[in-house]
Amino acid sequence: MGKKIQINKEFVDIMPQDYLDLVETGTYESPNRGWKDFGTATELIAEHSLCAGCPESIAFRHIMASIPNPEDTVMVGSTGCTSLVFPMIAVHNIHSLFGNQNAIATGLKRALALRFPDRVKDVIVLAGDGATVDIGLDMTLQSWFRKERFTTICFDNELYANTGGQESGLMQKGFLAKMAPVGKKFEKVRLPEIARESGCDYVAVMTASKPSLVEKVIKQAVLIAREIGPTYIQIYTPCILEIGKQSMEGLQEMRTSEAPGERFKFREFISPEAQSFLDGLAEKKKAEKLAASEATS
Amino acid sequence: MYNVAEVNAEECVAQKGCRLCIMYCPEANCIQLDTSKMKAVIVESRCKGCELCVVVCDAAKHQAIKMVAR
Image 1: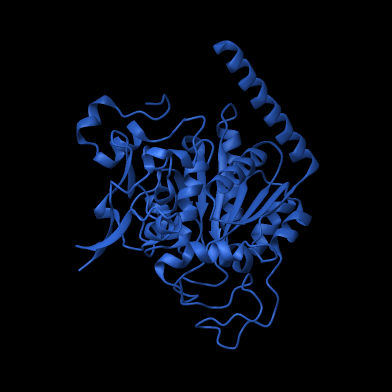
Image 2: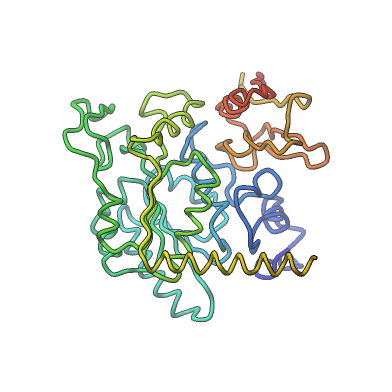
């Protein structure tokens, strides 16, 4: 049991079992939390209402397992399938008006810095492509221009899946959806490149098919956002219903889309300041490992 | 009728470090690792029957998981 998350002894006997499990076998305050905790530790997400086999829920699990200090993290969500999951996660979270998520995160981050000046508080925005790129593009870009220090994660499913498949800014050119029968006439918005030019210190494009990679990227993004400046991650989480796939085909769809030359091939941009920060972290870790091995020998 | 996954403990190779089904299951806390036997165990009440675990297990040629009707 950690120090920050504890149950008042008077209430232990009336707390639900799920809550007790989270406190006793959850991964709060674990310094090396990651996807390797799956199967043995209680996850910070439970019994969500997404469809069977939804790739978004795979991505959600990997992200919840990777965020560096969940007990001091506030997540900001927006309308969409992700807002069905936020009530089921064991991290403080705020549901914002559609598209306002980066504006709310800005105020939240500043308020937390004033209220808890001696504690590390992370803010993570997690929204779909409609909220990030179409409806909330103004708020998204302005927060990057102002160099607000929080992480923006975009779950890119390339359409408005929750409302039946309308065309979105991140949809690929020529794609036919149920509510976009003519096919999209414009190119997919190149938000990662826009993010880089708008002042993000770390930008990554990926799919959720490799938990180890998701873990590495999320940790880097949150740590850089804490110290240097805004970070942006775009994760492909296909909507299997809207692209006409079976429940077990989501993983293959993600793997196909990240093949060399495809639109979600893993790429990242790290600014020089962020790179020197990461190098410093790596050196510190190396020195700690060396000290630990010397202590045992 | 409802389909859920079932692990054949004799075929499961979790003791060798395989965590494929646990890694790729979209449901949280659904496939657990039995740390005494070192085998994957399905929590049936959380399984939505998507068959992703069957796909990843078969692709790795372990073939330890199959879908059963409940």
